[in-house]
Length: 126
Image (cartoon, rainbow, N blue to C red):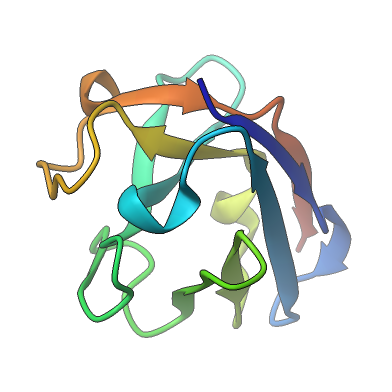
């Protein structure tokens, strides 16, 4: 099991930026594809972005394309989510997650991710 700890959330004005970090420990981080998800009050958890174990492929939800960038540092066991041009509708708890199996590049579904962090709150004021 991999342990994940997110950080970097906070309160920001619309149009601003935040960078989330997710530090991993426990399993071989570099063999797992990683993802970011978010959950707003009263809504289901939704996919935001994912990055393959090697770092050379990424996926994004349509709602964040062109504004968010996912990246990873396999030497430091960290995955990042750079969020620019933030909107009020980006307000949510953001979760970092690792895919269930190593060397896998699954569809961006909650069910394909087996390890989750505790989440970090992002609030965007309009």
